[in-house]
Every structure is written in structure tokens, then in C-alpha cells.
Image (cartoon, rainbow, N blue to C red; front, top):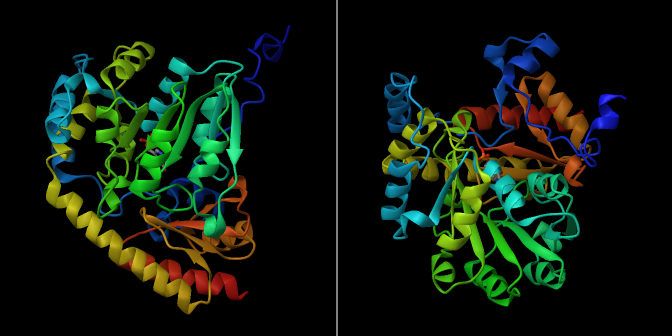
Length: 365
Ligand SMILES: *Cc1c(COP(=O)(O)O)cnc(C)c1O
């Protein structure tokens, strides 16, 4: 018998996530000097890690011989105080991606359905398929805007989870608080909204779903330390919801699913309010810089609300390739059904200038 014949059903057809290429890989493959390469492919923070988070991580390394506090008490305590919720309303994940998977463990099985937008963050579909459930994809509206009434209309008696991000990735579009709460209030009682807030800190006024949680609506919010806190390498995020939902998700995780270095860094990073405010302000400037640059090049773009922009370049893969040869790594989104577009992370002002110059050269060929 082959290993393939021994494998569980579904695992051989499970799609594989394609991450942004690391600088070292591109340098090796193309024979370029890594020092001259910039990566604007994975929505990483161009400012680097939160300084408080970094210092705490360095301190925590001295205790690397000890198991983490598997209850992540200090972090949950601080989150509870910050958000005005109970400690038992938080679960910590190995990145918010793990929390998506834990929700699958908790609520998905063959025969169930998950509703999501077409061109939504691909992990929603991967998790759905991983648990043998069926993804139901709803088209985006004009301008790649999200269509929340269409998500609602796609709900059936088999639906368990509806996945929604705002700002969404890779489109960068945001949905209003009114639209989101109208959706949550209209969902039938057998459906949970998974609200992915990975980029919420980049908004001036992120929608606040805590009142919906308080009135017993079925919604779970996911946040990450990978984006504005600049801790993507450490892999840590959190979910908050009704205590009853969180207790179920806690059962699905490993006892020490998040390492102690990440937990210490995240706990300290929550105090880095000035850093977060600076990153948000610089990101607004970066979004404007890219938008002005795209306009000058006559390129259509979707005004982004996260830390990235989606720009229409013609043949996305060809322009991605040309940019990469010029030492600028971006993200093609053909796999999202958007073959004419590229996703570009907001970099430092100098990186944005470099991207725009290389893009001008790449699209004029
Ligand atoms: C980056 C991102 C996340 C966060 O992933 P982590 O596992 O926390 O690094 C979640 N959702 C979306 C839509 C993202 O783009």
C-alpha cells in the first residue's frame, strides 16, 4: 500500500497555501543581492516589531527552559482589562490562522457549509475543506466591495460558519459597522459569524462588535499580533466572543499552543500604544503615497483600508515576475480569481517610492 492510499480522504486534494516569497529565496533563485531586495508581499510591518514586544521577547528567552503558562493568564488578563470583557471570553492562538482552524475543529464536519466571499482570504476555504465541510462562495459586488446581504442569502440549514474580514484581504475593502451588525442580527441561531479583524487596528474607527457579543449574538472576533504589532514571526493572535463559545474552542487546542516568547511579547506589545498610533498614521500616509503613484501611472486600484493596496496591472503574474527581477517582491492574486491585479504592502516611504519606480518600468514594457 502506498502512503497516498493510506491517507485520509480529502488530504490529497487539500489545496496548499502559497505564502509570499522570503527575500533569501528570491535572492537565491534570481542571483540577486538580498540587501537590494524589498518585500512588500505579506503585509508585514515596515517599522519592524513593537519595541516593547521585542524587549519582552528577549527577556522571556532566559526562561526558555520552562513551559509556557498554558492558560496565557497575563495576556488574557490584559486583553480583558483593555476590551472590558471577561477573561473567559478570550482564547489565544498560534497566529489567528490557528484560531480559524480551531473553529473548524469545534464546529465543522462533512455535510456542514461555510459561507464566504469569492476572493476572500484563502485560509477560510482551506479550513472548511480540511474538516470535510463545503465552502459556499458569494461573488463580490461592484468595485470588489463586500456584499453582506448576499452572504446572508447564501445561508442554508447546513451553514455553521460565515467568514468575513474587514478590512478584507486581498481586496483591502472595509465593511461598515452598520452592515456588519445588520448581518449578525439577521443570521439564524445555527450560524456563527467569524469576524476576522486582522487589519482592524489600521482603521480610524474599527467596528465594535462587543455589544453584539453582549446581547448574545453568535459572533467571534479574531485579531492578530502579526500586522500592526509587527510580531508575525512569533505567531500569536487572539479570539474574543461569548464565554460559552470560547470554552468550546479552548477544548480544541493543544495545551501549550502558543510559545512563551510570543505570549510575553504580545502582552508587552499591548502597551505600545504610541508605536501602534505611529504605525497607523504612517500607514495612512503610505496608502496615500501609493494611491497617488498609481494614479500618476494611470493604474486602477482598490482604495485599501488595511496596510496594502490592490492595483490593476494587466497580467498580474507577468508584472509580479518583472518586479521580482527588479528586486521588489509583491503578491500576485491570480489564485484569488484576480489575475489582473497585484497586492502591494505599504512599505516605508522609500520602499513605496522604489516600488512605484519599478512598477512604472514593469508596466511600460
Ligand atoms: C494576516 C492575516 C491574518 C493573520 O494571520 P496570523 O496567523 O495571525 O499571522 C488573518 N486574517 C487575514 C485576512 C490576514 O490577512
